[in-house]
Image 1 (spheres, one colour):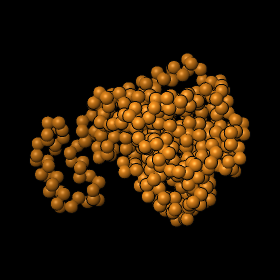
Image 2: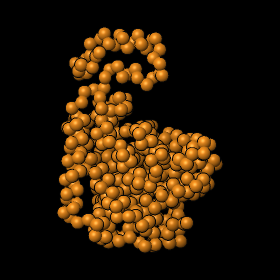
Image 3: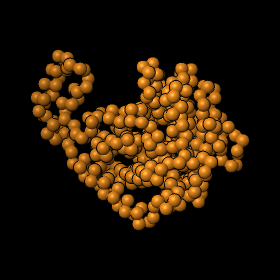
Image 4: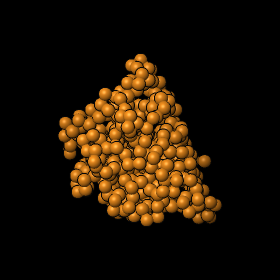
Length: 379
């Protein structure tokens, strides 16, 4: 099915128009509405609201020096949450910077998730990653690289392996508008198209690759149109419309699972906040632009839809916010007091059996008193 485009350009193909479901008054276009259940819509809103509150809390903790670094998802919550709701537990996610929340939506514990930001003894990655690089085998989600782009060939390769094995697994690979200028993007799209792998590649076009505007990344009319060159069916969707995203991603996943090959999706959205806590966006963009996109806030748009359907009111929303704030505060309290990872853990997961030279190094480490900042981690 070729998705219907927005009214201003009904004749455009799927990679030039903009697929949308939600109207400004909160109603849904019946021609494009995916028919999400009330339970699923409320779940999407809950996840979106929790992420918004969690991001605000973590930025505050970073400013207080309690967390080293953080990259918020503010304004872009709709895409990862819709994607997480559209896939199955066995599917794999190869994320970029702003899709870590998919882990929580798929059942990853919040406390363990936060421990990866602190990098302490509760971190299943043993403090080996920098903050905001969360991942977990429990939910088939792979960490992204700060050198943006290499997750896409990995996603295509995993999908290719699934195809060769006859698995029904689908992989999702995420990329930002800036990373489409990396060679990895072109390699991934080429192999995905030629070998028709069960992969969905999603570009979150948030208009800014840190301080570089999307207009300097490409001269193409859209990012989605790039899929034509690789023979990959592509669609451009309103990235602040959960319902539209859920439908487009669900259809792309079903298409891949049925053996019909990859899909490339451009989710048109906007990064409301800074690129990360190391960034000052006032140096390169106008506040008027930010305020324009704040009027298209995905959380506010979904809330209007829920109110329109009589699924949410102010009292229920306030109670939900109080509940989520309490959940986040409890998780932070449980994790923040944990010590650093045990020093011995540096030798874990290097080899199946520890070789003699590393065994000697471990014994030497154990004989050496820890630095004062490390506490009592020695054995």
